[in-house]
Image (cartoon, rainbow, N blue to C red; front, side, top):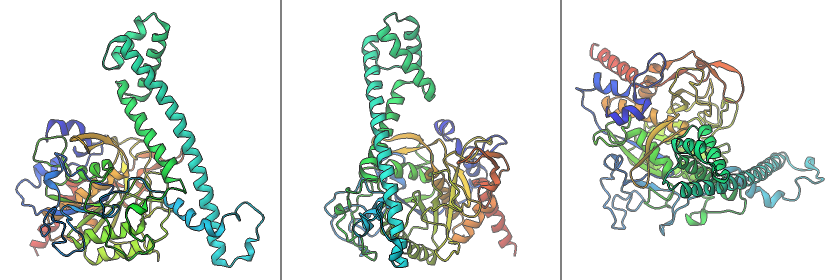
Length: 525
C-alpha cells in the first residue's frame, strides 16, 4: 500500500480493537496474491464522473461495440456514442441539468392547480371523495414543507453570505497588512501577540478563534467550507424548494411518459461531477499507478450513468438508469442517492425486478438524515410495495474509524429491519474532478461504494458467485460490534448491533476468507 494511501485512507487498513477498517490491503497481500481475477462492471448511478481523472480513466468501462464520436448508435442499444455510459439528465443538444427541484416541490406544483386557494381557508374537506381527501392532505403537507424549507434556506443563505463577506474582507485585509500569502494558525498567533493596532489585532484574534473552532490550520480552509455551504444553501433556496423553477425542458423528454427511454446524451461527466467522481474512486480508483488513492476493487470497470442532479432524482430517470446498466453488462450497481417521496415508485420497482431477473446486485446508501428508516420514508426502499424484501438490494449505513461511542456516523440513517450493514462513510478520501484532485467527504454515499467495491472484489475473484451468494457472504462475514453508540436523532445510547440487520461493519478480508472456504468445501464434495 502506497504511503499516501496508508496515511489518508483509514478504511483500507486492517481492523483492530480500536479501529473499524475493512482490511483491504491485508486481503490482497495474504489471500489474493496468487489468484487471477476477471474484470467486473460496476455501474455508478450518480451526478457524473470525471472521465479524465488520473485515478479513474484507466478503469472506466468502455462500450466495445460503440465507435466514439461518430454520431451513430453503432451497437443499436438506443443510445448514441455511449462510450463510458449514459446521461439521462441531459438534452440531445448537449446541455445538461445541473439543479433540480426536490420531489416534494414537484408534488406541490402538480397538486397546486387543483387545490390552491383551498388550503388555509374555510373548506369542507368532507365533501371530497376519499381519494381526493388523501390528495388534498398531501397538497397541504407538501405546500407547508416547501414554503417552510424555502424560507429557512433563504434566511440561512443570507446569514452565511453576510458572514462570508465579513470574514473574507478581514482575511484579505490582514494578508495585505502583514504582507503574507496565507494566514495559518502560527502566523495568526504571532500577529495576535505582537500587533498593537487594534484594527488589525482584533480581526487576527477573531480569525484565529474561527480556525480553532473549526479544527483547521489555514484561513483558506474556512473560506472553502463557507463557499461550499453558500452554494448548497443557495441551491436549496433558489432551486430545490422553488416552485417556479423547472429545468426539465433541457432534457426535452415527456416527464409523464414513464416508459420513454430514448432521451439524454453521452456526457457522463456533466457540470457537477464531484459526488459521482468521489464515489467512483472509492470503488475502483486505480491501484496500479501509485497516484492519489487506491480503490477497494482492483479488477473493475466503472460505468457512469448520470441520473442524479443537485436536487431530487426523478423516478423515471432512476428506473432507466438501472435498466441501461443491466442491459449493458453491469453486474453491480451503486446507488448513492435517496429521497423522502417517490410518486412513481412502481417504475423504479419494475426496474429493480428487471435487475433481479438478470442477477444484478444493487447497493444503496441508507441516507444522511440520522433517522430510523424502519419507520421513516426513504426511497428507493429496501422493500417492494407489497412489503416483501428486495432480494438483490444491500442497504448501507455509515460507520466511522474509531470503535467508540461515535462508531456510527452521526448523520447516518439506521434501521434494525431495513439497513443490512454498515461500512466506512466518515472522512473518506477519494477522487474529485477538475485537475486530478482528492478530498475527504462523508456520507452514506461514501459507505455504499465501499460495499460495492467489496462486492466487485468477490465477483472478480470468484466469478461463479451469484448476486445472492455475494450478498450473503458480505453480510455473514461483516464484523459485529456491540459498542454503545449515540442514537443519531436523540441523546439516547444504544448498542451498535441494534442499528442494522447484521449489527456489523463490512470486512473484505473476512468476506474473501469465507468465499475461499466455501469454494474449498465445494471442491471437496
